[in-house]
Image 1 (cartoon, helix red, strand yellow):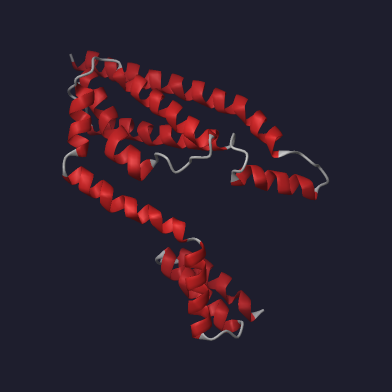
Image 2 (cartoon, helix red, strand yellow):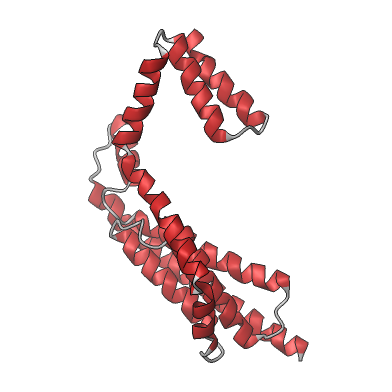
Length: 224
């Protein structure tokens, strides 16, 4: 039972709001020591786990690249580009991004686009600039609403698009659970049944984006 001390450390660490990474490392270290492993074996286990999943570290390579692009005016260029477009570009921009994000996710390319590499440096500034075309006197609250919709668009596209891909974790999980209850269902069936849901999600969010576009125009009318 002593090896369960790691669970207690995780619960206590999260309740006390300690750094999650340090809490998990402390939990793993305590569990390893309780199981009779020496420090060298625990460190080796950490190294093996990192090496086996080293593709995760690729994400960190993207961050300095994005930082350099932003330092050299990526956001400003994106804003100036969309600012030349006529009124009504807000809904079109975000709906187009939703279609692209959902399409790539349906093909299993979930790492193409995303919050850090696409939404923050490109989509959010472009959406904000499109809203400014419709209402040059945007308030801070309105700007935050536009940014929130840009982030939500990415979430909707990814969440409802990835379930169409056969080898995604959620489909494999459902298949495994149902097999445990005696139901043999092929992953293709899950994928096909996810298509109507993805289409519905696209249409519903597209309507929400259109309503956002109209609200921005209404704000301009009130300001005038």
